[in-house]
Amino acid sequence: MRIGILTGGGDCPGLNAVIRGAVRAAEVTYDSTVIGFRNAWRGVMEDDYEPLDVEVCRGILPRGGTILGTSRDQPFAREDGLKLVRKAYDRHGLDAIIAVGGEGSMAVVNELHQNGFPVIGVPKTIDNDIQLTEMTFGFQTAVQICTDAIDRLHTTAESHHRVLVVEVMGRHVGHIAIWSGLAGGAAMTLTPEDPFDIEEVCERIVGRHRKGRYATIIVVAEGALPKPGTFQIPEPEVDSYGHKVLGGIGHILEREIHGRTGIETRTTVLGHIQRGGSPVAFDRMLGTRFGVAAIEAALDGAWGEMVALQQGSITRVPVKDAIGSLKTVTPDLLRLNTMFQPRLPGDDHPGLPVEG
Image 1 (cartoon, rainbow, N blue to C red):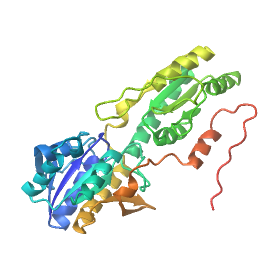
Image 2: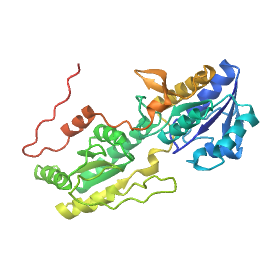
Image 3: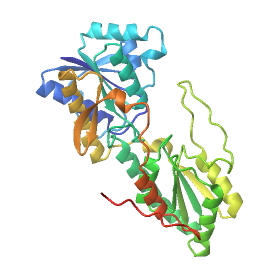
Image 4: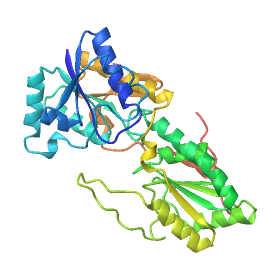
């Protein structure tokens, strides 16, 4: 077979592991050929590509980012998009294209499949918010980066008796915030799934100070929101792709906490540091497994399907079932988060669900 591969959306640790795994499986095990399209679907439509083989992929496993480059361009955003994609299939004699990306990329895979194109999806997002897969590669690396940063910030908070707000990625879900907040021993973690009351946040901070705990770390996902009717935050701008430009909630919290409590407060925004650098071992392994599985799905003609991690095994799911809604933080993790925040008089112990 001749198979194209592309990486779309935001960059993510582990993308090169997927490319390497796919190329290795195709060339060495299944006597097939892979070509890589540069900058996602833009490369498909503009015929910007490079042949990929084992030699080209040598040494890329520990590298962050993607050797193919990425973009958010997609064929359904232009009138001639489908025609150009069809020309790419015909020009290169492709039997399939493997698209590696987030929910937006998986939506494109689904639409192309509905239009008769042989496509396979590989889920990619450090937010870990794609349905039907237990984990996406890059997430564990992002969590480790955030946890390491929180560990370092503890010493500054303790030395200066400050509140330190740590803003992490998480547009609509709080997986990175919850995992790194709990692993890093943050006093409070704020997520999009559980809107916060700023007065209550400040009361908990003041309560810590009264007990002699003068250092407070608060982790907040960039998409976290206040409870309706508490206080207003500016409506975010929208980029050229229709996505809200988030970020800045950390500085808003800094001003509110300092103003309401008088306690010195500072903000650290980790931003794109969470995306960069070498992937941890788990993400290298998962990316490799996804790459191999995507080639095998193409060989089986499993068009319109997405590879996924379920109960430790790699499986396939219809991509149409994986899009349309995001995988949010589970109630048990939200309750666990509540257990580790500072207590207020009258707080009920949230407890944890009994395994059944």
